[in-house]
Image 1 (cartoon, rainbow, N blue to C red):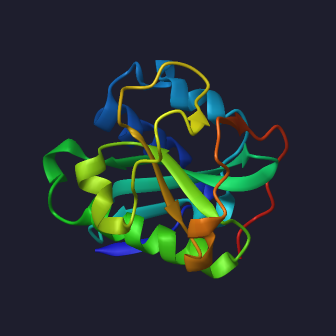
Image 2: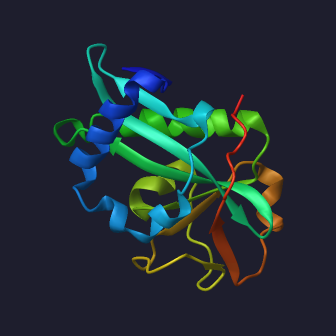
Length: 171
């Protein structure tokens, strides 16, 4: 497996991969309301099997309690290769890169708690965060990027908002 930062030439392949992994109606989900602009370029990753792109992960900058934070996703892996470690590799590498930037305190996502718990994600208290639209119950997850941040979460309810400007590139 090879993981690298996505380049401009990968865009069409990544879009096709996301469509294959999630189906044609994935843009209808409420989480897409948090992705109006470009993703964080330095945190958009692709995984390959050394021949072709088989997985991708993107991060988007969002606004939570007046502070920029990260939104993980979508994580997409070719359906026939799911369960072979590509997603795990992408998430681990993406979180490592996000931690190294020291710009954001938290990563949020809408996803399967059983899958993302292994990466340190947990469910915040009910009503602590307000999502921009309907969300499947128990799918909002959060992970601190710095250990000391466990104590500084806002008590809520706090709205999670889309960032309306282009985020700075991650280093």
